[in-house]
Image (cartoon, rainbow, N blue to C red; front, top):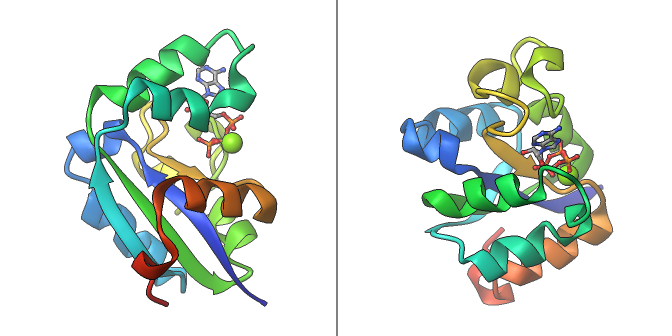
Length: 139
Ligand code: ATP
Ligand code: MG
């Protein structure tokens, strides 16, 4: 089934000029980038986005990293897009990520792991709505 999922190319990656390289992996996997914008997240935006992790010990560090430099927010579309992108990203910790995945190729650490991808279709819809108007997504 054709789905949409939400992606962020994180500051560790934009800082190292990896936006194009990551997009190449996304597109090679058959996912279409149907919306994309470079943005510097505010503290409030990052806190809202990662609210589910508010009680985790790394929350402050995570919000700090996500607001330090620009990110690229994206909507990806394709067959089974949510699960497919999780596969293309690889495990949260790059040490555990499979060969050829974005995190294996580019991530620096479990915190600076280059990309975010929605973990359910429900969250994908919520996250897409946080950053994109319907008319800005062109499939
Ligand atoms: P994301 O939600 O960013 O796609 P994920 O779903 O693979 O990643 P989560 O468990 O949702 O992983 O964690 C969210 C983010 O918090 C991770 O991507 C990572 O940047 C950071 N993070 C997770 N665990 C740790 C940790 N133990 N130490 C530092 N940062 C962490
Ligand atoms: Mg997650």
